[in-house]
Image (cartoon, rainbow, N blue to C red; front, side):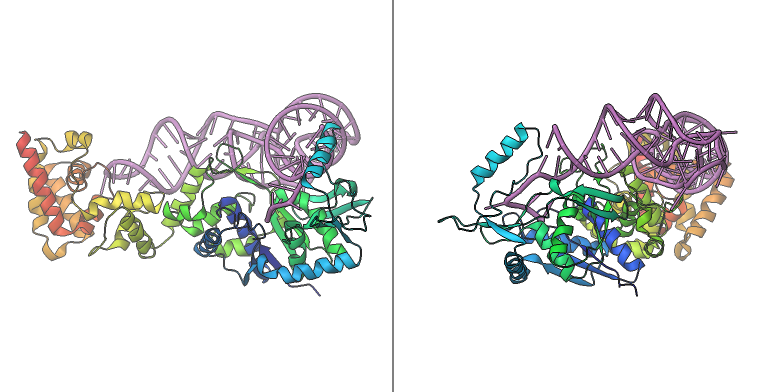
Length: 469
RNA sequence: GUCCCCAUCGUCUAGAGGCCUAGGACACUACCCUUUCACGGUAGCGACGAGGGUUCGAAUCCCUCUGGGGACGCCA
């Protein structure tokens, strides 16, 4: 019988939840969902110096925004200390762990000597057989790593990976201040939480053999491991605060849709033939760990933006409306008495983010401060006056018939009468009402603005044209 | 330094020995569509890091080199 899949996302709350962490979480979540398994959130906060409450909140908020809901947790390692102490006591009793009294200075010296000999720095095990405590020294507990042989595991994305045991030293599992350490806690938790698949960044490949040895010492079978390639900044260098390592919540602020971000992230390291766009459901049903790439991937902001636009285009305007409203408030506009859904529909295929959408929609909410100089020079000169006047008259009689179709018909007939292309009529109107030469189609634009605003703005433009003649 | 991982267009990727004249996507350049901008369409630009093997045949398998990344902490 096959075990139920159990995956976990185990961030440490020492910084923000950035794009790399989000991708790791996504793959873990996808794998669990794909196999009807359980996705667990575990906060690895044993570094009490650097872990913060704020960082925990950012992780929780980020996961919620992305919609990566956990079935269990969040668990906190700092709440599991009694359990860790219990396991350590057991390892000590069975001789699989021992006290080490080496001082920091002694260890530094050891490392320096090894480096000088061109060796890999590692603890040489000098306290392995010590039986007597050193007075006045609070010892650490080290794990007695197996000597000789090798540790091999089959990584789902990388294939077989082998480490020689001699590369692994006796790592500290309990600090002298009583705090257990990372590799140890991970091993205990992965076992206790019955994790079946450890999906994490490939910077953890080096930790894997240590954790496997720890697991075996506890009498547990190691889980399946899948190490994901790193995500690099747009410039191909490691993601750091300097190079585009934004918190996922900053993508929310910047106007990205969670499903678009997830889609983009999924395509970083994973693919399904030539398909670029996926719904969440498609990702869940198609995701497979053995299709995951081995090499690191650089962020491509343009493609992210494109992906976002594609998802916006596939969304109903009314579902985008609340998000657009939030963006507008961020720009100091309180949207009221307008059809935000219609605005979103008119703009979703011409803007790449919700923020861009909000910026492009500003003229719907208040009369533009002025006209874009080039557009005004070209379309609002003295010669535009007569046409604008006629358009105004034509539109003014529409009254309750103020719909995009009616506006369109009115302008078309006017263009016919004046022997002008629709473009020659539309462009001056566009500049008159929006202040620039770019907007959604003129009929939709006028329909959304409504008769009052349109006529008022036309009057203003007509006055301006007259003043120039 | 030692160990581990990685290597296809600028970037994300397809590619499981012949289907490869190496496909798709973003970006870029033309053109088409068009009331602007977009969207959409068509075309173009553009890559198997190098060298050795194995094989009738290698982007694909093996080795070496080179390049990149990661780890080596009483961080996670």
